[in-house]
Image (cartoon, rainbow, N blue to C red):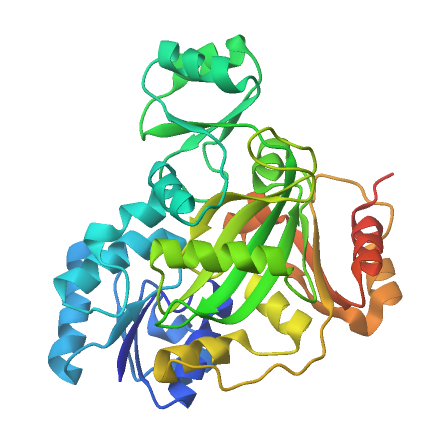
Amino acid sequence: MNFIFISPQFPKHYWNFCDRLHKNGVNVLGIGDTPFDNLRDELKKSLTEYYFVENLQDYEKVFQAVAFFSFKYGKIDWLESNNEFWLEQDSKLRTDFHITTGEQFENISRIKNKSAMKKYYALANVPTARLHKITTIDAAKNFISEVGYPVIIKPDNGVGATDTFKISNETDLQNFFDNHTGAPHVMEEFITGDICSYDAIINSNSEPLLESMTVWSPSIMDIVLNRLDLSYYTTDFAPEKLCEMGRATVKAFGVKSRFVHLEFFRLTQAKKNLGNVGDFVGLEVNMRPAGGYTPDMMNFAQSTDVYQIWADMITFNKRILQDSGKHFYCVYASRRDCHNYKNSHEDILSRYGEKIVMCERMPEMMVPQMGNQMYTAKVADLQETQDFIKFVQEKF
């Protein structure tokens, strides 16, 4: 089997995907914008060959790299990056090279454009916030007259909380239209709730081989806009109701042979026509693994290896590594250099000791969302999760 992995060096822990494929006997061919000598040793050992391009956004150069591998190794069976930024380019490369084991370019809009997602949520009977594709300020006012302030404005095709706005009154709305240029945006009614993700590895029959839930607080949008501290945690088990909605969403979108990260609101305030407190409401789909170190947090929470389960899905279309039965909570809490905290770095390490499973500085490009310094711990339950977050992030 020939598998082309796009940008296997970023995020840095993605070498694990290549490593597990390699251990399964897969011919792993890497294309990236980091010189080979700068790759970590674990990744080098996992790759049969690596093709360096100076700019992965230069489609012609990446096309040439795929063509080279196709000529040298024969038919390419898989092409994947597992990265939101490259999903569209991945789909175009698959289409151009007749690689049928993934999303094709003609279908990519349904999983990239927030406005296109609504149709598939409806097919899955999953409630979602009402949405308006922004055209004119008068049309926006008409929509707001139906749903009320506040509303959220965000790119129709965007990643994370980039270029996202909370509009609380007519002045905010006017300011947006006075200053907005560029990519199409959408407007959604505001929902009060926690963001919970359904993270799963899906086989070729749209069936989950692994399911997990991560709870994000506060939202990435609030973190970026207000420079808040991020904390989130992966639970010991995913609630059955979330799993039911996640599975229905996967089938409605026709997802096959992928690692998925589907976002839901868990209502903390009842919303007419959407649900009561505790109910789940669809937010958006992401057809790739959750960002940051969430895959590793899933490993710690379920005492498993999601990279191996994913590689087995690719290679054998089934799960071979079985559940150990030992489940925990895994919690991430970050701090920003601009804030003063009550407990020192040494205090955190001393108090939580061996429960700390990751502790490091975050790459500069991830700081707006993830903070400057992160601490991740494996703990027993929700109470200890909340205690850990408070201890790490408490300020004077």
